Image (cartoon, rainbow, N blue to C red; front, top):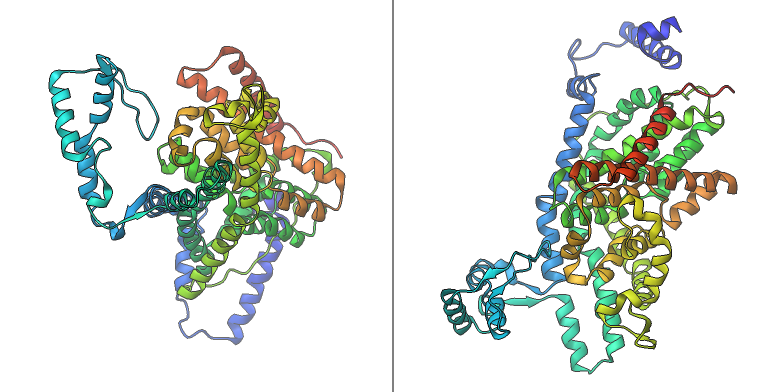
Length: 553
């Protein structure tokens, strides 16, 4: 113990390190390096990126840059084009004419709203923000405004500028499909299923593919160049202090692509206690399926904030560490941490082909899921949300009658559970439940329930910032999709441990999201004192669980 304290490491690692030092001394006498005494390029880099004090800040900056470029700059621009153009109204070919059209639309301004208010005999008019759906304060209508509005209508027409007049206009997929359905006089219910169900749901998910591909390129590069192997080494020192081995980081790293192989990678951990604990916590890290959901919340509710998207990654790591601390102090998980030894590969430039292949494999897997599981899910969600009891009978509902749908009734039964965490409406509750089938389903369900093309604006109106963060955290940390739950069952080989894992994940997610919402609401000036007091009590228990003495075996 005194040796471990003096050398700031565990006995296994000290012994292993001494073995390598001894081997190096033997090699020194029989093997002469060409550049004796000179550090290799990899070693020079490692002196910085694996430094005791600099390693974590560098890792944080690297991941922030990855998510910033993927979610806010390049990835966001591509996703905006996909959502607003390809799966929206349409787009100008090669962007030619877009600037002129936007200038004309800005000039047209509120002309239509002004003339509509005048026709209704109103003295004021209001404007609805396209991004947030917020309604402006009443604006007084003056003779000058009316004259200008008539001038704009005469110039551009009652509907405003036509984008086709400014360049080659390519209609979006919904517009093309709708015109085709109208041409064949498709039945209303089938048209609703295709447009409001399949296109709105699947399109909402596929619209985030560009951001995912950009993220996958960066992650593939970091893995292939050897940097992520260093992160496993860096995290071993941190994990070991909190009851987890560096071996636990390998499944976590694999889990950034998909939770199923991440859970299966836990087989490499020989210690049964550590293996079970890693299985229970691996899916806290955001997998590829959660990326569209993260992007949706960050973009719609937080205006594309870079810190929200990046925080999702570090929330996952923090959840793993805190879970490790709490679980390691309980009898089923007590014991020494298994040693972790790995050989770090030299840094190298990965080939473009390998990086693109890795990106494509991950991206194609996501797209295939959108064409199968998510497609079937959106059909079921559409049926349940557009059929119900209204006007004295059962039948197809209008959009404004959705609160009378089958899905609304089901959601209403469970929505109260989520009221303390800030999103007690049936739409959000249903979206979270459908996420158990596949996490991408959260986005698809919201695309249907929150109005297809207007999903972002409607979400911004439905969630406050504390509620949005709570919604993000809960769905990041709660039980994974059914496929991952199946993998947990196979790896645990025990029904009891499977349910224990699911219970821990859901309970942990609920507690964290509850505290985030209650504290966030109070600090925002919209909280209630009872919820705040409960959150303080929950936080106190949580802190006690973190710092209490371990149970006696």
